[in-house]
Image (cartoon, rainbow, N blue to C red):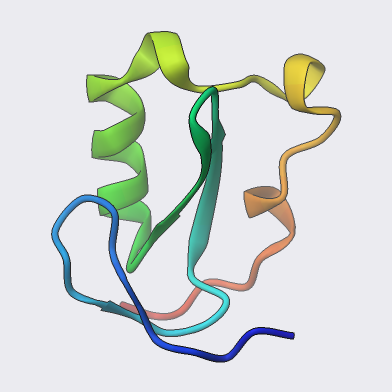
Length: 67
């Protein structure tokens, strides 16, 4: 398990593991909150892989961070 701090792929704030994940055509993106995940998804809709394309959504299994 990787517990190294990462920066949010949208706003660059620190991400508390496991963060909020989104599978895209360019790889796995990590976000600090659901808001950043949603905004990134809307801005890059054509790059976001759906559950059908990715197999299953990893973000659906993550607990809410409370942020």
